[in-house]
Amino acid sequence: MTGDPGEKQTETDDGAPAISARQLRRTFKGEIEAVRDIDLTIARGKVFGFLGPNGAGKTTTVRMLCTLLPPTAGSATVAGLDVVRDAAEVRKRIGVALQEIGLDPVQTGRELLQLQCGLYGITGQRGRERTEELLELVGLTDAADRRTKTYSGGMKRRLDLATALVHQPEVLFLDEPTTGLDPASRMRIWDEVRRINAGGATIFLTTQYLEEADQLCDRLAIIDGGLIVAEGTPEALKAEMGHDVVSVSLDGADHAGTEAALRGLAGLERIVAEPDALALYIDNGAVAIAEIVRRLDAEGIRVGAISVARPSLDDVFLRATGRRLEGTGQDPDETEEDQG
Ligand SMILES: Nc1ncnc2c1ncn2[C@@H]1O[C@H](COP(=O)(O)OP(=O)(O)O)[C@@H](O)[C@H]1O
Ligand SMILES: [Mg+2]
Image 1 (cartoon, rainbow, N blue to C red):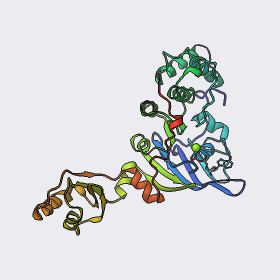
Image 2: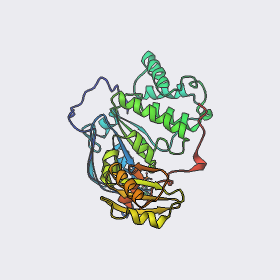
Image 3: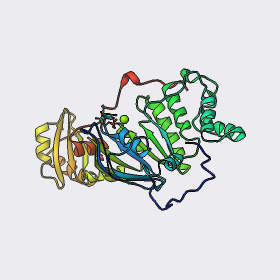
Image 4: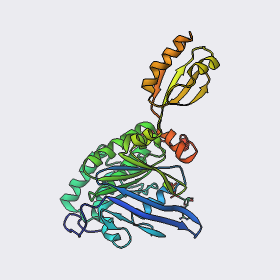
């Protein structure tokens, strides 16, 4: 992975997507089907999310796309180059921050970045300038001369992010960049990712967090058991659920009577009773609210607040996989406060 990425131009198709995969598959020991026939097309300049629980096949996919693991079958291109045939060229164009961070604990952040610049042939004054730029980008200028072992979890992730950026990659792979971080550190990483993306890089990131996929990604794929089970923009995926959730807070009103009054509403899919509320899964909740109010009035039923919400990505995940994802990504033991 040496050489000056700026000087050498290989023949690539500039119209090619940032990442494509056709029937990409990886088995281990011939029997563990970690990734099963994945098809992907990711346009340049996007933030693409790969959302799935532990063991879904996220890291295996990333390793294949980054040329670190040969596929068992199928093919993939990154920046228009084949990940097997043109592996060396692919590596010059990508940056990778894997789940396991291997920082030398006695090095300072600045030393580590300078070393990484050197690996890419960015030396002397240019290396020093690039190092300062990157420290600035990830907000580590003030901590640059501290040994990395004194960094918080969030600071380590940010430094790792910076090392993946020294050669200005076209495509950046981030494998669970925020797992185990507290919410503030997580949002800080999101800011960095957005900034890097605004600079032109395509970003492929894996996550177990619904909110991360929702907030950060232009498009996402839900992966479960090595298969992509849903794909689209967060908005489209939620819209495909086809209904809103109208919540009627009962404030002591009778469950059964209220439910009876609301049965048969246009577009109503089902009513779920909660402790002091009814959740109505219904098409176009905003329009339905008027009819709900009319019916309850007509029956003389007094309720509390009525609110309408769009379905969440968790509802999408539930429908695609039969399980809820929420909560599985949290590992409280790993959570570290960000002191930076
Ligand atoms: N080197 C390996 N040898 C055997 N099995 C593996 C190896 N790497 C991953 N797996 C298995 O492949 C599946 C997918 O793993 P992985 O891609 O790491 O999932 P994720 O990153 O989504 O948690 C899991 O069942 C995992 O145990
Ligand atoms: Mg993983």
